[in-house]
Image (cartoon, rainbow, N blue to C red; front, side, top):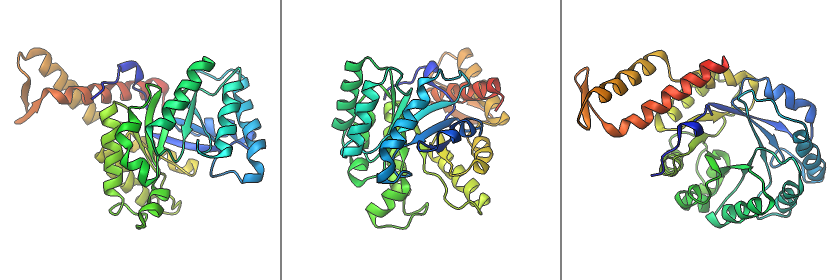
Length: 291
């Protein structure tokens, strides 16, 4: 298992898409409170508008981006499609490439490695986020997650995955797929982000699903509307009790000379320290950003 450095730990509690075809919506998305704003060039753009969206979406990054803690990503088209190849060529030619790219429908580590090499040749520091939403991608998730040191997170694409698996798009039928994505991300020392909840009228249902995703090991969850973001940020922010417990655990291990301690009658072993430190770092960065 790769161990993430503290510098690489950052809140990824929520994300929202902003259509590349409508650059005027980008500032609103940045002000939504989401930890990640993703400029959309893929599913949300009709084929006839792909070129215009690519031009307008990438043009957003010609201006300096504020250092405000919000992660900025562009979701390009599938790397095995003509639209995706055109997106990559545009990014490689750009003098001001996006800070990160989201790669949809990835099916093999070779796709990621090829893009990694192209970005190296171009001298771009662009990071990568990979969506696991196909059966082939799920099968290769562990190898995909380790395919490039540029990868910061795996995203679970539940809608497409349900269609591929011929199952209902619901928590229980997709539990195995979600679990495999979490395991692959944990093995690579990167974040796992869950699929958006699609029913805007059911905030209680979204909260419940977000809590289940958090408890399964996801770092955050997508949104389809700004009204969902506050709940997601709340669910995926370690609460005061969790932080107090994490600090007690760390302090106990600092005093101990063994690989385990007992707190409140419960045995705690050293491997949990990594998660305790991650929770504290997330909470501190959220508090520092005032979100």
